Length: 140
Image (cartoon, rainbow, N blue to C red; front, top):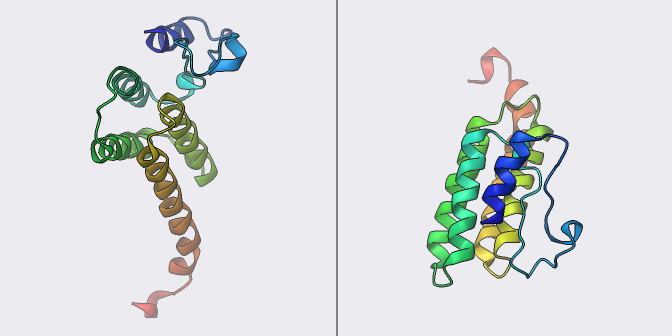
């Protein structure tokens, strides 16, 4: 599979960043699928994405609930293994990983829905975090 080879070539040669579809000259629907930005994610996450993308590209009968579960597992890995300098960096990492999954099988709506839901939860926590810190000692 070319996406796993793209992952290994991205680690071997940082100057050659793999891209999705049109930049490689092949349409996205063709067999040539490469993952852009995989080297920027933690290795554990990159391996999970590569495995799941291979599964998505190989099997047409994957139930939506299983696609949603696997997507959430990968999103959990992104959140726990990303050394987030700030929340915007974490959001970009989630978007990058989610974009790779959605690009692998765009017709599986559960994948995009789960990615958007995780992004919503992260943004909601960001919005609620300052309010929780301003309560003071007596707010308990």
